[in-house]
Amino acid sequence: MMKTVKFINKYKLFFITVVCAAVVFASCNSSDTQAFESTQLLGSSEAPPVTTTGSGTLDGNYNAKTKVITLNLKWSLGNKGDTTIMGHIHKGEVGVSGPVVIPFTDLPKGSTDQEFNFVSQPLTTEQEADLKAGSYYVNIHSTSYPAGELRAQLILKK
Image 1: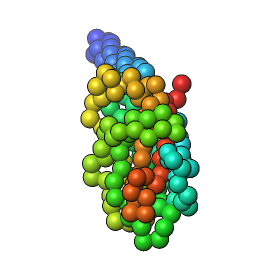
Image 2: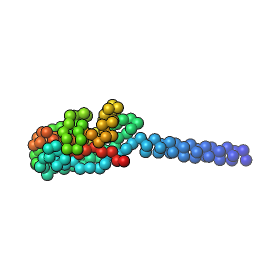
Image 3: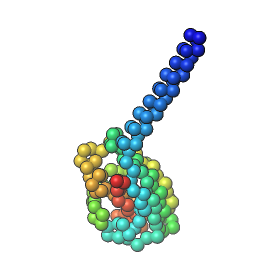
Image 4: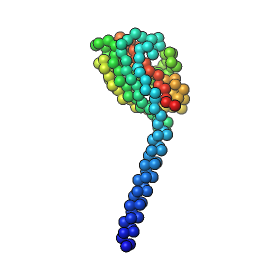
């Protein structure tokens, strides 16, 4: 009888531990991470707008606990044989050009169709405030449009 009680108590303890761990894990992840609006990278979003058949998509999130931006970018440039020359996150409201605040390191170059995953360094307090205010945008530069061919504003979902 004593062995049966110890056996049952071990399983109760294991079950309670698993449930508690799941609750802690779920609560940490969901409240710390905020997704960006899924949006298109477009030439018409550039400031001033550019005429290109290129386009792309931007998905990602911001982790308020770690202060890190994570992005997944996919794009196609408008001119065959064109190449991506650089990309970054700029500070600027919709329709306004602004300075580079976060450069993309290891951005793929040399082909028209690209996919790129980016993880930033932790943002400063000022950068976090600008991001939350919707003042940041992603810009992809090409050989045909060295000032920027594709742009998308980074807007956090509410």
